[in-house]
Length: 114
Image (cartoon, rainbow, N blue to C red; front, side, top):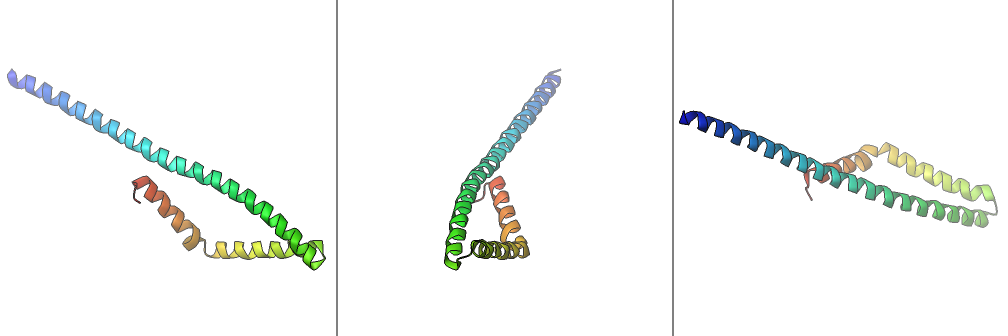
């Protein structure tokens, strides 16, 4: 009979060990999710402010170029052409310039590598 008590103790210890490991996995997943989520939210806020800056700057440059050329359409047309060129460069190099760095940064954040 004493072995029966040891078996029950062992079973209880294994259950406690598994529950503790499950709790650790939950906490680690929560931490990693919060790190990635906060990084995403921070990026969105900074991106929004950057977008507003770029928008106002673009309007200023468009009006400046319009005044330089004496034609309202010319200044904004040149600016649109510039953004088209930037867009094409980003589209053609999207894997190397955008997808890979973003993917690597997300993986580093999830795995806590610096």
